[in-house]
Length: 225
Length: 246
Image 1: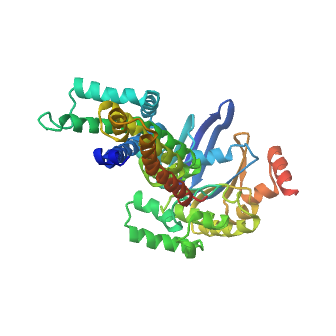
Image 2 (image 1 turned 30 degrees about the horizontal axis):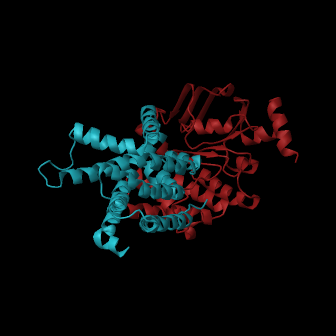
């Protein structure tokens, strides 16, 4: 057991898991918000584009999306985040494309969580916003979205937890996150239950506080009507 | 009549198969207070909501101060800023304080400085008698207080005309008076008002004209005194009989 911690940097692997999670979460939150606004906008084209995105991305396995990112976008289309001259070219592009893939995939879920949040905002709020002369963008920013986010905190927490665990898929494109290291240890050392438990515990330590925090937040920030 | 401010001409609207507004013609002069009254389903609320285009119409024209209601977009937003609206269910912004509710429009739409907007908001809240609640959230106020804040929020935009869509229907009886008092004071100050209500006391005290709607048509109009004491149409007699006898 101690040998594993000595020979392998388990903490660094979980660090990578955390790194992927944080940046993919930020990306998916931004993209998901844009998508949610598109899906409730009065412009038909935007609404259809939004639903097309959701239906396509949400129904595609994450593995395929990440493989597309690395094989399609990176190796074939040569879309690089760091130039080939860099010594860590493969590693850095792998990590960044993993973040993009994770963000693109989870944005669909963030969008739907937010849209359910928008549905918790009574229609009268939007009518009142429009009737004092706010434009669509202003009433979204000032009135609808702040309330929608508060109504969507619990489902957004679930998306964040799912995202944390889904970072494990990044190991298939060679990103050295926690589950990738676990596979290495199992292959090189032992396939003991302990190894498995250590990594499972690591994920619990990452996700459990998120769940508790978001539940508390959803109570605290609930809009009183 | 004074110079016309709100003019509706041959306005038609359907909800599915239901013809809710049938060739409505209505002209409201500047400074005039008009009551829309009628049985439930007569189209009075819908009519009120078409004036700031919360409901679209299929045919006919609506002009406010000489300007035809534009399509959805920036122009419509600008026009709505000049038309105050008070809803049956108050619709105060639930995540903002009372003060923020009143300053949002002036700051975001009129580009007023925050400090100036707050000063004016407090004056308006004083006028409707809820200035001491300025830091609270809507859910902490009674219905009557919320509705008075909603009136202040509309007034903060310096509207040319104010629409009231059954402003007292969701209130407990003892809170109706406090809201009506504010509305009477507003009417006396010369505000142009279009009010959907069954409050006859208010109509007699403040209104210039009562418009009676039934099945999407204007059936009868006249001064409050004429209408309530001596209605001409059978439909109005029947309606008044029902609301007066209990």
